[in-house]
Amino acid sequence: MEMTMSELNDQGVRIALRGRLDTPGVGAIETTFAAAAARKNALVDLSEVSFLASMGIRMLITAARGLKSSGHKLVLFGAPALVREVLENAGLAQIMPIVPDESSALQFLAK
Amino acid sequence: MTSDPRSEAIRDSSHTVYVGPSRLGKEIREQVHFLIVESGAHAGLRVLLSAPALRIGREAPCEIVLRDPGISRAHCRIERRFDSIVVTDLGSTNGSFIDGQQAVGTTMFPVGSTLEIGQHVIRHAFGTRQEFEESLRLEQELQEARRYVEALLPAPWTEGPVRTEWLMLPSAKLGGDVLGYHMLDPQRCAIYLVDVSGHGARAAMHGVSIVNVLRHRALPNVDFSRPADVLHGLNAMFAMEAHADMYFTIWYGIYDAGGRTLRYSSGGHHPAFLVGAGDRMQRLITPNVPLGTVPDFAFADAETTVPPGSRLYLFSDGAFELQRPDGSESSLTDFVAHLTTGRIAGLAETRRLHDVSMEMQGRNTFDDDYSILVVEID
Image (cartoon, each protein chain N blue to C red):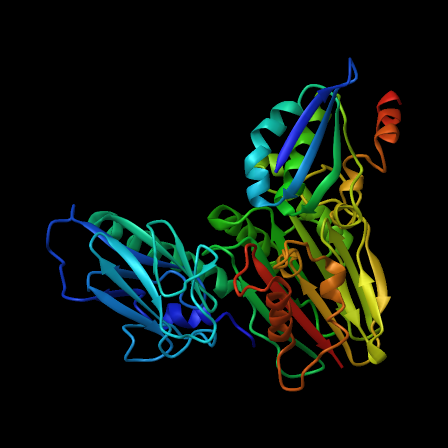
């Protein structure tokens, strides 16, 4: 599991995840991810995530709840079909925005 | 009932095997090699390696006998070579694997490594005799906890117009999945499956709390025949910030035999599937969040008609979130394809689907908790 971050000027941070978001994958990045997705908007690129298990969902929910409490947003984009299906079944669209691509995610932040 | 074969092993064995001359009473700081069976029907078994060699197989005269159809009569030999432990496969049908690599000839079995044979995963541990004794005590406590969780699960309904069978295999000694069903009145029954985030003792304790609330209908001002109200009540009672940041997913349904209706609500849970005559399949899901994550969420429920001769399938994500041998991922869709095809007369559906999952991932052991509940409705 890999994670890369880039700043989005004053809009927040872009976090790209790559690999399997299963128990070992989450274990490898959880602390870094939690630190990155805190106190500013976070756009999370899932386009290179091949697998999303319940521990990955938990990591996203925890971050989204933390950001919401400080008045910020966590936006997911680029999820491949299999990951998208898991997100939908898990009811995550009711907790955080899930959009197709980065430009839609940026538009969402501008709202 | 398709019960977990491990429960039999727990009830009928001491779960400790000493092979070789007894050394009890000797210096407890003595360093010892031992085996810990981490998964499979005999999970929890500990074996002290005090003899120079011992054999593992399905039958005596092997010194360690594991009841597992994937294990040959005499499967492999474990022996000490100076300070190391080695494994030799004895020409078994399904092979012996150390850390995922097939053991060819005599192979090193390093401390901390796992030996996979049949459905069993066995770890090589090394420590003081005192550590071994402590791990035994801890194991016994976990077995007690596990027996309590199992005691909360309902017996299968084998007769009448609504019949049930289930299979639960925790990935650790205790799992975060729970399921249940009970009659609300002579016409209506509640059916549910809960999957707590995470595994192990913490998730299991949370699962026990939730299932006890459902069994005893212990939510204030909630009509348990209304699934959306039940999820709303559970969501208020089990807010994740008040429960060590644990949340859970649930599928909860009420079958009414009078109107042949099934009213249901899912919270963060993938769909249940209702397969009727002609293998017509309905996907039963409502767009709700996982429970505990969003305070005051307005839960929705839905209703469908149950055609005669239907089967309702509920399962945890452990049944289909699997990595195939080639590294690709299987999906819900892949697993669900097997609900309408491949039934085998005389074989329990839960057992057949368990075999399907094993085949999908090319392995006999699962990384996640594995639960399936099948309800047949005449």
